[in-house]
Image (cartoon, rainbow, N blue to C red; front, side, top):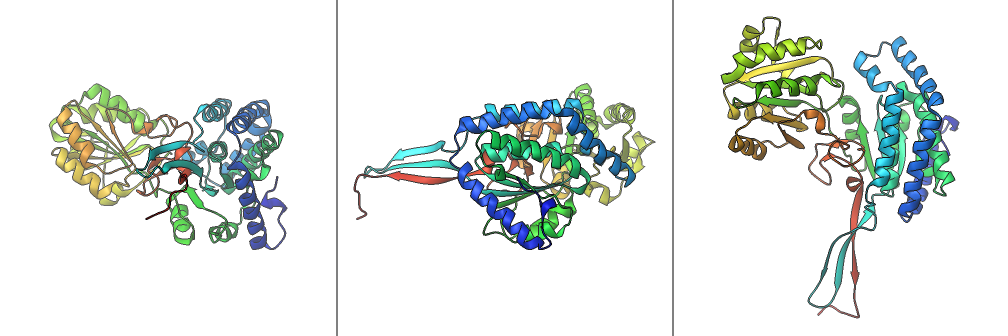
Amino acid sequence: MTTLLDAPLDLAATCRAMARRARAASSRLAIAGTLAKDRWLHRAADTLLARQTDVLSANARDVESAHESGLGAASIDRLRLTPDRLRSAASGLREVASLPDPIGQVRESRTRPNGLQVSRVGVPLGVILFIYESRPNVTLDAAALCVKSGNAVILRGGKEAIHSNLLLHRLLAESLEAEGLPADGVQLVGLTDRAAVGHLLRMDDLIDLVIPRGGEDLIRRVAAEATMPVLKHYKGICHVYVEKSADLARAEAIIVNAKCQRPGVCNAAECLLVDAAVAEAFLPRASAALAAKGVELRGCPVTCRLVPTAKQATESDYDTEYLDLILSVKVVAGMEEAIAHIDRHSSRHTEVVLSNDLALVRRFVARVDSAAVIVNASTRFHDGGELGLGAEIGISTDKFHARGPCGLLELTSYKYVVYGEGQVRE
């Protein structure tokens, strides 16, 4: 197993050597059996729990450094590992093992009039470069999904999680070797030098896809520099619209969950839209429930009149992904104004409508063009695990190849396999 901590001074050559090893490993993983991949996932889960003390110790070093460097509370929350989070991560590895293997899966089959048998068969993408920040549990999710889908992965986590990621990578690579799979199928860029990323982004001859997961600045840099396709979303400006027929008690619980359960993630709500017909009844009660969780409201003039503690919102507030206990609020005249606001300000990630009017719900679902549109439930359900994909490697707001949570299927492509009996084209 190799990390760039062992790299010589020629960083470009070292990055290329890493990519070459990943390409060689991807050829082996592409034909690895489902049983071997699933055994590796279970072994990795067992090892993670058996080495819990070591993992938490490494993570504590990262958290301590994060406090010293002034990292924000939301970022530290994403960085921190706990026994519960490790148990959840181990369960995630086992859940990926339980999912159908997409490699070799016949997705479509037909026989042509001339007797040719045509099938569309799932294949891996090849080598994936995954660049991410803060959350070390994502190291496990990414490795699990890539290997199960027959891909090799090069992991480049943020410097704030370096000790956690180094140890997690070691456990994953050792488990691969123990199951007869190539340890180079999961590699870690162990240097925090940003130049390493730049070198890797230019290796489209060896790397098939790059997935950046983190702040908007990181993702825009990757999208600008990458010579291979990029699977991404820039930010998560997620809306919750309370339509006038909504159950207001249920709406209150949903907006509190969408904003407060984990405010520092991309599927947390950032904007609340409230129908004017129910604003007077809903906003005071919702604001009290949100205030009890420490949420600051930034609202339109009507919001500020109904909720005196709210601050006046600026136009830029409606374009901001806070990733914090801050929520922008706007009272709208009805669904058309709500949709117009979403069209103008959404990042096309997740939008929620809370309504008991089925006709209006159908109109909202048809009109709103985001990766996920959710009816009468929290934005927080736009997640691979919650939607039944197992883990996810990220959420895409693009429209080509993959959209929404990217799990096993989204990390594959397909090829046509054609069987004939001597047919020639006339």
